[in-house]
Length: 82
Image (cartoon, rainbow, N blue to C red; front, top):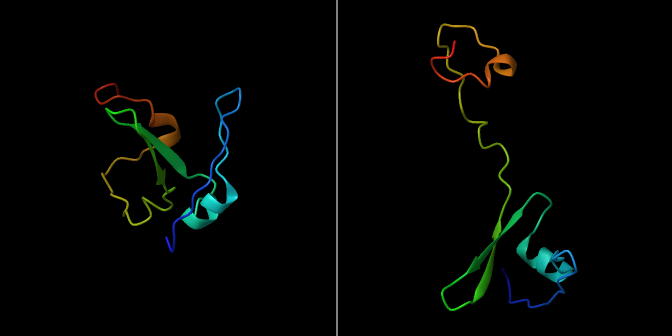
């Protein structure tokens, strides 16, 4: 971050909050990102931005195991249930 930004928001009746625009812009918050909440032993609350990761498996190469598979049909099979 280039500089400190501070803002506040109100928790509504459904316990939802809105991340203020200045905070979103400075932190680079995008749709799909997550916010990790943490309360320490002293009761202090901290918030950490967890960026959405795209293409996490894009570098993996397929492996030929010699058997044909159908992921749509086989996805619930447990080893040994064939």
